[in-house]
Image (cartoon, rainbow, N blue to C red; front, side, top):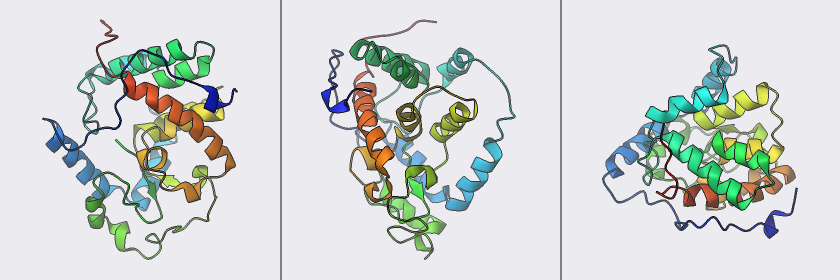
Amino acid sequence: MEETKELVLDSGFSVPKSLDYNVGEKQKIVEEFYRTQHINQTHDFVKRMREEYSKLNRMEMSIWECCELLNEVVDDSDPDLDEPQIQHLLQSAEAIRKDYPDEDWLHLTALIHGDTFPLGSAFDEANIHYKYFKENPDFNNPAYNTKNGIYSEGCGLDNVMISWGHDDYMYLVAKENGTTLPSAGLFIIRYHSFYPLHKEGAYMHLLNDQDKEDLKWLKIFNISQLSSGGEAWRFEF
């Protein structure tokens, strides 16, 4: 791979400085999503979900069949997106392909790509709507409410329990089906919504050296997928 510091975005989109979680018509919907998520996503809950869904015994479908199902899905965790998720996936993939035509693994990652956060250690205040974590049973659990919690510094994110959702499930599907995506591609799929890490620099103490290398690609990817959410490309089906 090239050094990511040399990679530059030039897709022609305007890039928002950040997602705005506090204004607009979707604000109440977005906040309710995070309230419910923060209260109910505990270490034990995520462990159960991983055990249940990692069996991958529900159905088989092609990547495109899976993408088509997203034509009816709008992400309630994202205050800036009112489009079905399939539009977001295609816009992101096209923006990445324009900027990096030779990085075909990155185009695919963008196509198959709520905020995520670690469980098993203290919730960082960089998490959006942090106040709702105070109602989470793990918040006052002495095993989980210190900086490192059940982890050791530099243990690597592969060893950290991350909140359960579509990102972690897609990561499991890709990994268990023998994907040829590089480490950075899997890292992007799994952690692209981990904004406290790649936007605020929180939880860096848990990363190992490979995580830090992959994080460079995640930051490149995130700029492009944020900038692609407009009317520059609309896809009809």
